[in-house]
Length: 52
Length: 400
Ligand SMILES: [Fe+2]
Ligand SMILES: [Fe+2]
Ligand SMILES: [Zn+2]
Image (cartoon, rainbow over all chains, first blue to last red; front, side, top):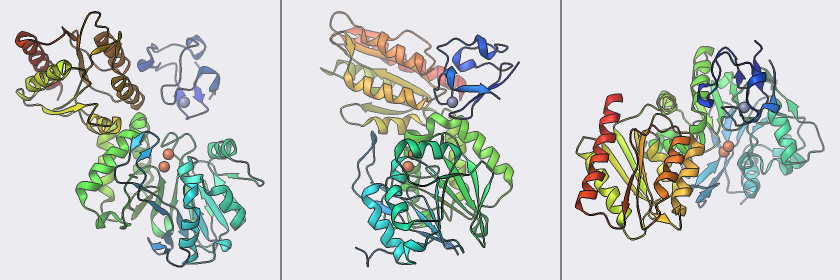
């Protein structure tokens, strides 16, 4: 599964890890993240992410 | 002022040419009781270079300090390490006046600068890990995103083993002294911690990564030159260790009890709860929002293990000063806290639930329901508050 990088702060969303603070289980692909999900570092929304 | 402002030599090739803002007390919502400084630095390389500038009202002070060493118009390179206006407010006019050959910022900095100002020249993006050639020496640049903004970067002058760290390792402290060893250690520690708590705490995971990365570079730092407060030349290890400790957010046996009160009922609850904590050996900071500022609370929360918050119910809501401090703290993302909410009420009593929502959003562990007392707490109600303090203490002591 593809990693996505936040263009604002450089945080990398790794589906293998998920985002525990944001309540996202490991194994969740980027495309399955809810639209309300935001970058755990800077708060940017999904539209500001691009494939790594 | 032109002839009385001096540059201060920091290392073989570097001068401090910043400004002291003795009387600033409100730095975007953070109370700066000791004022601040905006540090700019002049590198006397073959290509004379200015690192960062100052807040716009201090432009003349900066140029006068540069003028004590060289004609500012002979500066050929300007590097902007951080776009926030306390460091770039003077930049557009300084560029116009100096007309340097090149102006650099990080790639994100180039964008952010264009969103602040309009320049009639190119700002050159320097990528992470690249160096800027200054003739007889090089300036290495490392991106430090979110420390303090997405655009932030460090620059490192290997020739003098000097790190320009912009906001990182800085503090709001106006002094006539320019170096850490000229200032009382307790003041340095307090102001550096207050700065960390109020500015960098949300980015603690990035601080840990950065310390790791910088440690792995194997470069030596003889001087760390931040954009606020003193230059570190004596206790660099000390401030780096402090950053590691603050960023880890390890709780200590300390509680912050912060509250607002209308008729002293919630205050009595806060005091009883504090006694329960103290009797279990917990250090307590009891803070009324009437007496303290939100940035004082942030400082105390930095090394705390317990956050207990109290508010009366005022017209079906929490007290405004509690919304202030909790909104602020939530943004600062403190971690590893145990907590509880409490408050007195007259009839509806919404405040405790609302406080708990803030605490839950902040990921504070709530081991029990909050405590609501109708009107004035009697002795058995105060005993409940005391016991709540004890319960929080027990939960914390399991962890530390
Ligand atoms: Fe900043
Ligand atoms: Fe700053
Ligand atoms: Zn981000």
